[in-house]
Length: 554
Image (cartoon, rainbow, N blue to C red; front, side, top):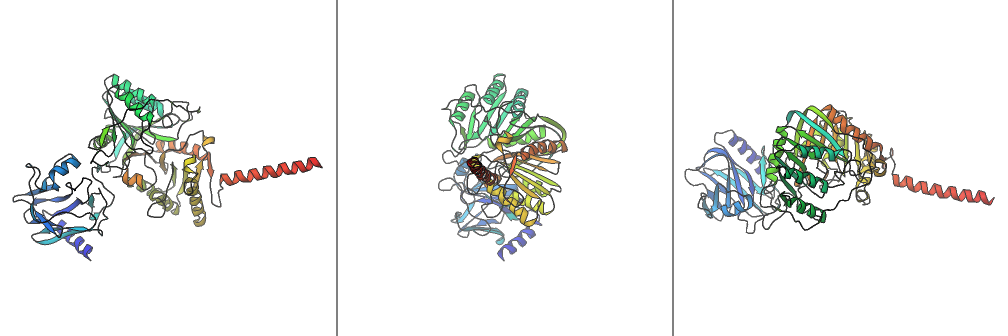
C-alpha cells in the first residue's frame, strides 16, 4: 500500500514544475565511521521547504539554496572527498568551510540494515524509501532510482555509469586466437603515434610488452591498468612484465582495495586497448602467450575486434579514464621475472578480415551488460554461443543469457551452445559437461531446437576455449570479456562490442563451425557422453581380446 501511494505521489510530483526527488543514496559505505554516507537529489528550482528525514532526525537546506540537476548531500564533505575524489554540494556535519552546511534537527544518520528516507515538501511526504523492503541493504552499494524503480542493477561506490550508445558506418577488423590475434595487436601498436591505453585482467606476455616498450621508445604515451587481485594473485611473470615496462617509462597500475578505499569492482576483468583515441581493440583474451600466441603457436580460442572509429574509440577512452583514476588504482608490483613459455605448433586457418559500414554498440559491465540478453532476445533464426563456461544463476534456474537462448529456441530459433572441455571445466560435479548434458536433455524433453557440445580440444588443437562470443541471425556478433555467470555482468568491469554486419557474423560463424565440428555431443537422448563411449570401447576391446584368446586355444 505504501509503495503504491509513493508511486502515485512521485508521478504527481514529476508532473509539476521544479519537482525534486531522491534518486540515489548510500547508507553503508566502506569508510570507518561512515563519514561518506550520502543522498542524491534531482530536480530544478528552489530548495526552500524541502526536508529529508530518517525518522530520528532531519535536514533542511540553507536559505536561498536552489537545484538544477543533481546535488549530493553527504554526512561529511571530508569523508566524501576521500571516497570519491570530489566534494559534495552540501554536508550534514561541518568538516569543510567551502561546502554549505545543512540545517539539522535531531540525529540524522542512516542505519545500515534497517532504516528509511523520507522527502518532505512543505511538511508533506512526497517520497519514501525503506530498507529492507524497497531496497536490499549491502555494504558499498549505492541505491539508485531509475524510471521509478529502485536498484534495476547493482551499483557500487566509485563505479561508472555509461549509457548505451551505437555508432554507425564503422570499420572493424575481425580476428581470432590462436590464428591471427598477435599480428593484429602488433599492427595496432605499430599504428600508434600519440597514445596507447590498455586495460587487461592479466598481462604476462613478453612479446606484447616488447611491442609497447617499442612504442614508448618512439614517443607514444603508453599506460596500462591490470587487475590487482586475479585468481591466484599476480604471477611472477606478471610482476616481471610490470618491471620490464616500468623500466622503459611505461607505468603499470592495478585496481585493488588500497587502505580504506575499496576496489570499485569485484574484478577488473576487461580486455581492451585504445590507440590514439582513434581505434580500440576489444578482446576475450588476456595479454598472455596462451591468449595471444605468436603465429603458428597453439593457444586459446578467443575472439577479437579492432574497431577503427573515433566515436567508438572515444567511448572506450572515457571508460579508461574512469577505470584508471581513483584511490583504488595503485602501482603494480614489480618483483618478478619475465618468462616466455610458448606453446605447441598450430596450423593457422583464419586470417584477419576487415568489414566496412558496420554498426557497433559498446557493451560495458556492469552498466550495459543487459545488451547481451537483449541481443539474444532479438534472434529470429539462429543463435551460436561459444563460451568458456556457463553456470546457473545463484538465485536458482539457468543463467540469464542461457534463459534467453532457451526462450529463443521456444520461438523456433536454432540454438547451438559450445563449451570448453579443459580439465578444470569438466572434472567437477556441476560444470561444462553437466551443463551441456542438461541443455540436451531439456531440449529433448521439450522438443526444442537447441543443442550443446563440449569442444574436443585435441581435435581442434586448442589449449582451451576462452571466448565469450555470440552470433545472432547471420547479422550480428558479440565479442566480449563477459563470462556467463552472475558475477561477471553484475559486479565486474567487463568490456565488449556488438558488431552488426553480415560479413562480421559470417566470419565468426565460420570459426564457430570449425570448433563445433571438433565438439563432442554430451548427454540427452540425441547426444552421447564421450566418456561413456570411451568406457564402452574399452569393454568391447577387452571382450574382443578374450574371444581371440579362446579361438587361439581352440
